[in-house]
Length: 176
Image (cartoon, rainbow, N blue to C red; front, side, top):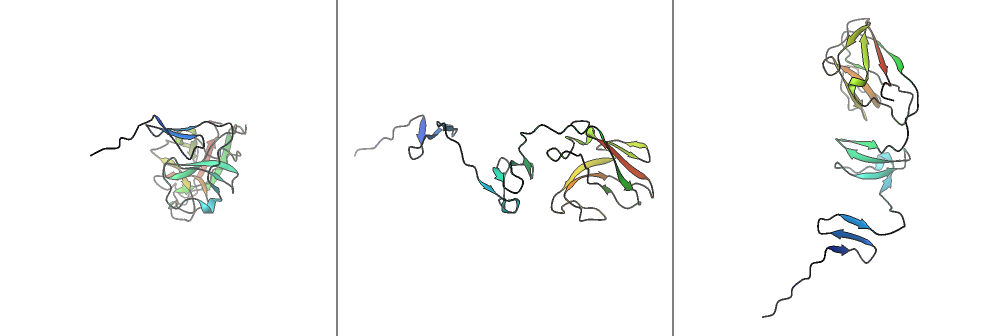
C-alpha cells in the first residue's frame, strides 16, 4: 500500500493572487494595490456582528469597527478645538434620571473618553462619576429611563433622580 504525503509549506496562496496565509493564519498581502473592504449604509450593517468586524459606512462616509457591543468610527481625524463646554441639561423633576444628549461641538468626537472627563453639577453641587452618575450612549432608543425613548447621543444617567427644580449643568471637552 502506498501513501501520499502532503508537503507542508509555510504559506498558502489564494488563487495565486498575492494573498497568503502563514501557518498561524496571519494574512500577507504582497501588492502595491489597495484592498476593498465591505461597505454599506448604517441600515445595512451585519445583523449579528462580532468584535473586530470592520467595514466602510456609506451613510457616515467613514470606516467603522464593531467593538464592545456597538459600531464605532475609526478615527483618523484630529478633534476640533472647541474648548471646554458648559451645557445646561435642564432641571430635575424628582423622577427623571437621564439628562442630555451632550453636545460637544465636535462631530468627529462627540463624547468624552470617560465619565471622569465630565464635571456634573446639580444646583452647583459636584457629582462624583460612577457613584452618582454614568455616561451612557443611546442608540436607536436603547437607553431606558422615565422619559424614554431618547434620541441617539451620549447622556448623563444619575443613580437617583435630581430633586425638583434643581438645575443640572455639565462641563465637558476637557479631553479635547
